[in-house]
Length: 226
Image (cartoon, rainbow, N blue to C red):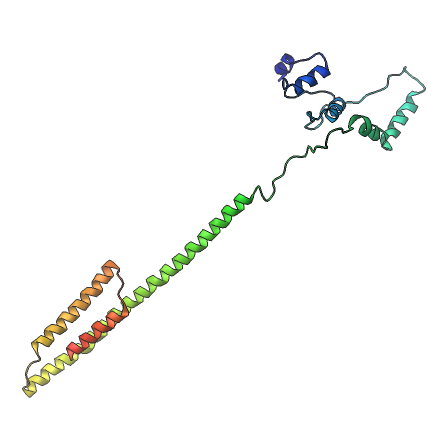
């Protein structure tokens, strides 16, 4: 930093300020009062940053001068009553250009609108996926209940038909009646076999198996049995 400043050193403040205006220098460090005055008169200049290495001006007097105490009190009084500040505003910080604010830029809602839109889109997508998951779960539970009902109905009919068929066989033998029609037995077996195979196929392939088809097959099964 020191070598860069030494390389671009100028003999006077006026030359350095002109070099800043000509884009030969990026910045110029000098007395704050002089820089603020130049920035207020030339609209293409601006002062930035905080003040550093503060120092004050003094009035030289003879040692043990009787005016020393009076002058010090007068300067202190001028600071306290705002006279020095009025002089600074009138002669140093007099603005010929439009007033410019050195305050840092702040973020507004328009700058953050994209972030809020992204968050809102993520929330909407999450709610949509939750509804899809609930609908799929209900569909899956309903299909499982249909399967359970179908298997339960088949088991009940099997339990009810087996004793009745054995009793009919014994009664037929005692009474000398003829055996049931073999075609009816064949149709009963074919219907029960097709019903069992379709239920197994539905369980393995997870296809839709309406309750109406279950009822129709059970009705044909009972009809064939009797």
